[in-house]
Length: 373
Image 1 (cartoon, one colour):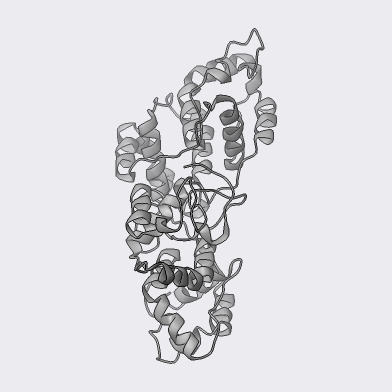
Image 2: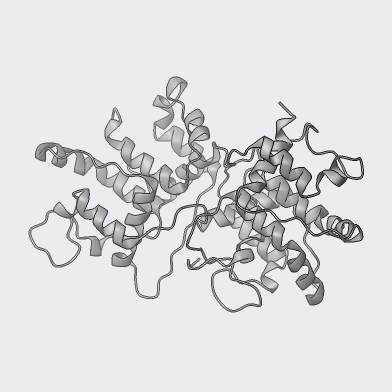
């Protein structure tokens, strides 16, 4: 899918995740299934996904900022009445998404990297110089450099593929850097993304478009075990707790693997493209993706926006303290399942459809979950 400018509600026909970041309820998502859901639910009757014209924005275009899952749900929520009206006019049945379908759709948006800070090629070039990479690798016609010229590298379009190339190159780099007294360069997720944009500008073939394909998390677990990772990463070194706490993006996972290479007891095993995608998919799958919200503020919002008028009086099911677990997936699924009836009830009461801005949705989710502790 190509990247570009994200258009408001055009990103928001979904709520789910890439390769499986599970929700607190444990629902894994799959990007390929997510794109299939877009087609099966006739979302592409109005939207496009990666090119072409449509009456609604292109869902395959990435914007100039990173979106959190709850913010994407907020935007979808805010624009739902308009989308439903457009679907009614076009004679398109409104989809009723399950949490699994919502997870798969979010997976699709994770595959387009909506949740990562956009990279900058200028910053990537500066990093390439500052980190000492240019000392060995030529980016133009420089002579006398022993490293492989960047222009001859395979096409690099995402941080995961860049991390794989760097990971496989690490065994050759380590002794040479040690002999020269050069420290191993560490990278943040944002720096990895900036380098990806820079390298992409140097290696992309004419007419090629950025794409991200990820392997199944189940296959990644097998790679994790077969390549020896599980031999060290257990007990105190178990990755699960750290990943849950850090809420990593794909770029930060990729950067973490690169930073980890010189700390390994043995040389890093070489990984194929398929293995790397699956491995990162697995690492991503064992972390929760939800952002922490402020329950006290969420309770005030729940009342201010009129939700308590039905969900706190018996006119609609009780939500807060109900024992159910809420996240962006459940909110998105509820919107598509129950939203039209909610809208009808709200209009009968002569009230406006509630809108959620900034971090309000994640605060409401925190409130709904707070009574379950």
